[in-house]
Length: 370
Image (cartoon, rainbow, N blue to C red; front, side):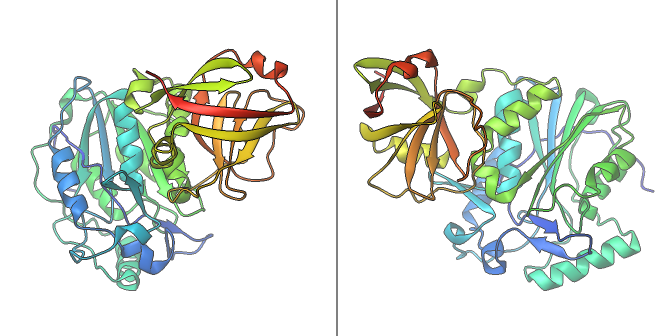
């Protein structure tokens, strides 16, 4: 085993190429189709370099992650718009695990660090799969690029990665072999293609020698664009609530006119929410349903509607791609589960009891707050 180091870390957020394991076999599962998996623009390199140099006031928190992107030489002309592993946020592009790392940083502060191997991984997916199998079978730890990391200043270390063959990539184990995390609080997070965290949490716990290890977060790649609330809830559940969450998530204050009343709300800073917000002022004819929601179709089809969930929280403003509609959920009832997936794009912040006074059909207008 190499001599352990201590270090300062700064993490690059733009990552892509999320790989997950299928069932119980050892194959690396792609995050989306194979072509899409590799469609990652070199433009993200600039994002990675700029984020790598970031420092924040919350310097006792480190967010470390490994990704295929940043460790693979991709052609400069790749189209990120068709990739299932890339999140488009306006003109910026982020890999899925990098996007989660960025959400964590936005919420709790800290510094970011991209784990980089000396030798890049193959661009060809099948070759990568074979190499990963070989590394795992041989217990090989790929050498990492030299850095000036000093871990002494960090009390809490988040470790992120895509799930490869139901486990962590070997490069993550290289990092844990090279840097001493003993006595620190370690928190894993990962992205996957539908098969969960696999054995990765156990591997992180064993290899990190953590003083304390908190519950991890596993996010399916298709749910990453709408994961702000998921990340916030997870951080709160493990006792690390975010600071200034509304500002950090880029929420925008809005007004909602309905039934002669004006309500307050916010739109989230997600690509989908921003796209719909760009249509404001927006009036939607909505019908009441089940004593829990108002919903109605919209006249345009958003392009950035990825992910979805079959549950809601009171106050949620959502988009549903199945019937191209928006909804406002205002009450949990005896029908808490949904039959069509919805994507939260904002929330009503005013008293929700007012919705009980509205008619069966209402024209609801969304505008930006002045």
